[in-house]
Length: 448
Image: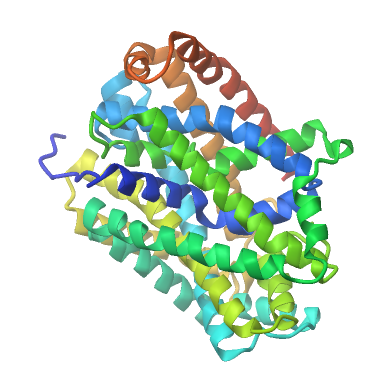
């Protein structure tokens, strides 16, 4: 239907870059990258990851940005307007993917709020790993606490999105992103001054080529695509608010650079501390909520550092969650003419009732017994969004740019890069990226 509702736009180029980088940074860079790098040999994984980010990752990022900017619409409307036929189905998949992603992401975001409270109270400052594990498992198994903190995090996210593109998303990211990097630098300095930290730095930056394998390369590619927020239509929505004068290539490189910097800082923040206290660098997802508190308990000023660390996680989670909610809100605005406030509240309430509650109760409260192929509701949402819908979204975006709207994309690129780079971009977007993403998706599905 025709929509007369104002969609909004970015107030400045730096505002867009910080918002898009905030989407890319998220919990993936700070929570996921260190333990995956630690489990895959450190330095060699870092090099492969950087190569993946600045090749396939950047190509995919630019593809989604240019789709959005060309159509001035979110994913579904953009595919319909530019591609005709059944291409809009790709947009529907993107909307479904981010809707599922929001359902379980807000649960993890709620954990960060809860751990800020725990850090203030000093409850997590112990070196007893068993006790820390009990604290974490008891919290996520408590239905009341899980539901309350999930609702709190979703509420914060919704308030930012309701305020609009400039007054909400851009303004909060201009505050949270610089604060995020400042807090990370504080933590990096403290980590690097620990006795024995140098061993962790060496592990992180020195390639051990014996660790190089096809699986590790595919892991790096999967993390690179995930950490840049491509495949879910997030950057299509953000790109739709860009002015025609914005240089998308330079903006995309800035976004990828900031997201990569956050990952590197996270590695320098966590791995030296892990080595300083003789902890397994590949400790897994529990590294954040179980291992790190144990490390803080052994540091001078540990309570303050724990508070800073979990505030840092919250900032990263919020800048990412608003980019997850925004595409669904933009979909309702573009497709059905919803008012932004009504659209945001509707999505938040429906998502919480349909997905947030089952995801929050997947670790206690009864829902953990309801499984599909052995997966809880939380795990099903994660699997479908991360392993199925996001890879499909990424493939469709690449194919769409390379084979359906290449003349429009080439016109955009012509004013920014050489003919040779345009040809390389087309090859990676139209051929290389879809094949690699398909391989990664198949491996992730088989591994699950």
